[in-house]
Image 1: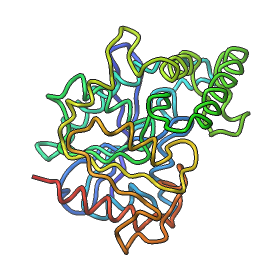
Image 2 (image 1 turned 135 degrees about the vertical axis):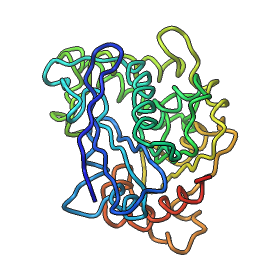
Image 3 (image 1 turned 180 degrees about the horizontal axis):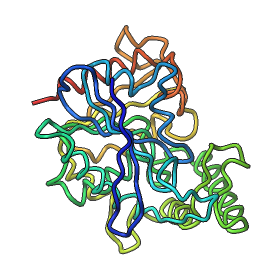
Length: 295
C-alpha cells in the first residue's frame, strides 16, 4: 500500500488536499471517497485501524480521499478564519473529478460519499452530467428540507435545531461545532447560512439553479445506503424521499428491512456507518458492488 498527499488549487485559489492511496498490485479503478460535514477524511481512512477506505484498497481499488474545503489539510479551517459557501463545496466537485481523471490514467473513476460529500457531488453532477463517474455509492445522503421529511414533529425539531445553530454561528462568526460537541471541525458562517436557507426554502444554488431537479440527470448506477440506526441526520424515510429523483437508484436498507444475511445485525448510526469496525461487512459489500460496476 502506498499513500501520497496530493494538492490542487481550486479556480478561486483555495488549496485543496487529498490522500492518494494505492493498493500493492495494479488497481482496477480509482474511487473518490469524501466525508461528512464537521469532520475530515480521517473518518474514512485511518492506517491504525480497520476503515472503509482500507477495505476498498484491499479489494484492489485506488482511492483518492479528499479533505473538503475548510476541513483537515484543506484549510484554513473555520476556527482559523476560513469561510466558504455551500456552492463552493459543490464547485469543488469539478476539482476532485479532474484530479481523479489525471491520476486514473484511463481507469474507470468511481465515487463514494458519506453525507455532505454525497449531496454536494450530486448537486454538481446534476448540472454537469457529462462528467458523471462510472458508478456512485451514497452513504446516508440527504438534505434537510421540509420536502424530504415526512414527520411534521421531526421537521419542527430540525428547523428549530437549524435556527438555534444559526444564532450561535452568527454570534461566533462560524458554527462552533466543536464547542457544541457536534464534530471536530467548526463550519463556516456562509456555509451554515446556505444550509439553513436551503432547508427552509429549496435545495438550490444562490444563483437559483435547482439542484433537486438536476438529480434526474445523474443516470449512473448509484447505491444508496440507509440505516435504521440513523435516528436523526439521515433517517431512511428522509433518504428515500431525497434520492427518489435518481433514475438508476439501488437501495440498501440496514435494519429490519435488510434482505442480506451477511448484513443482519449491522444497524449503524450516521457516523458509525464509516467509523465503526462493526460496519466492516457493509464496507466489504460496498467494495464488491463497486467492483461489479467496472466496465
